[in-house]
Image (cartoon, rainbow, N blue to C red; front, side):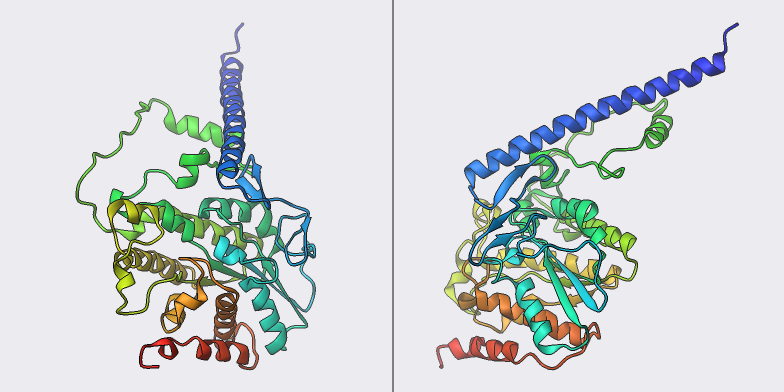
Length: 385
């Protein structure tokens, strides 16, 4: 006598197993693709301190130590190892971003300057631990993935986000909202389910049940149009999603974590200068013949997305674009988005000042920050002076 119930259950489990096997094969192929694309990227843009990686595409090469440049065994650009558990009496801060956050070297970065500023001015804690978790060349996708897999477990008290430069450069605002993220397009799609990026069998079963009887249709891209609606929320939708993931992952590990969101600043010309009519160092601006003022308008749009995210997450906002608007950017940036040592010190000072004003720490004024903002105030470099 046939037991149709057992046969049906067996067929369902066999189908789930086949789907999971196919998923494992797909993820293996995707990781091999990321490894190969990472190696290709590093051949075109060789960096001694980075290596190809099957998960992130590329990452910092652990175990490098020099006079002022270190990458420890955990892949952080600092000499000392990061303890998994927070120490009593220590305020732990994690800084996320790309090469502007990474800094010039392990000593000259705004996370390093922020730690020195806190130690110099604030007696709120016995010690301060500022972790530089930035990786040059990464997009927000890779940062969010690393937060999930490596950084959320550090349970920081405060997370500083100075990120979005590579998303700004990746997405062409005149081609409309992207259908997939830049990371997915170049390195293969991410899978956000499961503890190791895998979707559990029970989720596969639910997916199969939902899709029963549904006709699978491949979506066609929207037809090209000469007019592109200016919609920052849609243009930078992947940046916002990844910021939301970052917040969710950190809050899952530490519900009391605080966030500080920094707006982006760049080496824009002085007001009234002819350089505003020159194309900036952004590929899509050069392709469409946009000048610096038009390009800055799109960065302002991205900063608006960052501020909207901060409001939704009840995060603090440090408006670095406003801080540098009154300063001589030509002296504080050595290219469009990368700052000199003095510029990085000013970022650290602005963040510390906001932390004091918002009550995250208590402390006296940072006289180093006051001297630098006075020294590099734009009025000192105006023609009248």
